[in-house]
Length: 102
Image 1 (tube, rainbow, N blue to C red):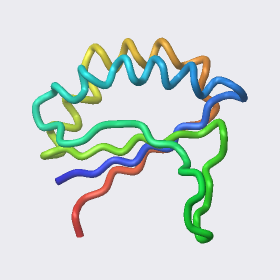
Image 2: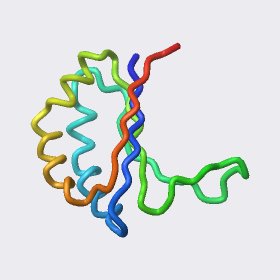
Image 3: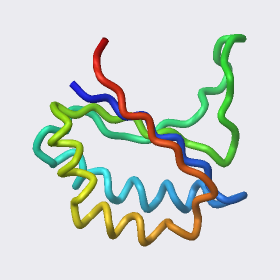
């Protein structure tokens, strides 16, 4: 199984706008062959004292894919290119971690 954690930081005040575009794209991603999990997450409130918050402009995308081929197909999907075009001017930074089971 392939795990992906993407850390996306919006330009100040733009996180909700990016999330609107992202959430509109989620059904197409979840319908892809090999997708196990795909969705955005933000900091939990009233969490443990050990929490390190990402901040008000950042969200993470948590993904699970059956294989690296499924992830590669996802990355090349037309709906992902359309999403990227919609949000490119709203993103300050993006870091993608691609992981496998240990």
